[in-house]
Length: 126
Image (tube, rainbow, N blue to C red; front, side, top):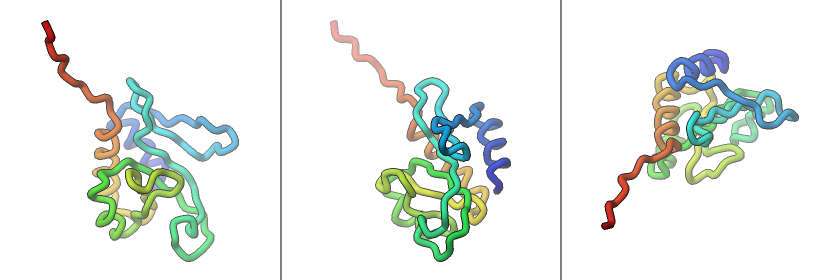
C-alpha cells in the first residue's frame, strides 16, 4: 500500500483527512478522531535502521495504537515493528510497503476503536 492509497482509505472509511501539526516535518501526517481530536494514526517517513532493520533507506511507516497483549506476537509478522517514536507498550509501527494491506486495515480499525471516545452510562443517584 502506498501512502496515497492509505490516505484515501482513511478518508473513505473514517471520514477524516490527515493534518500536519509540525511544519518542520511536512511529511508527518496525523489522523485524528473528529470528536475528541485523539490520534489514531501517524504516517511518517523514517530511515529503516530506526526500526532495527539493515539499511538507511527512507520508508513510510504508520504508527497505530494496539492492544498490549497483541504487540509481542504481532511484531513477529512481516512489516510490523515495535513503535518508532511512540510508547512501545501501546503502539506499533507498520512499514506500509511491506505489510499486508488487509493487516494494515485491521490494525487501523483496532487503533481507531482504542482511541475513540468511550460512552459510559451515567448512574442515576437519587
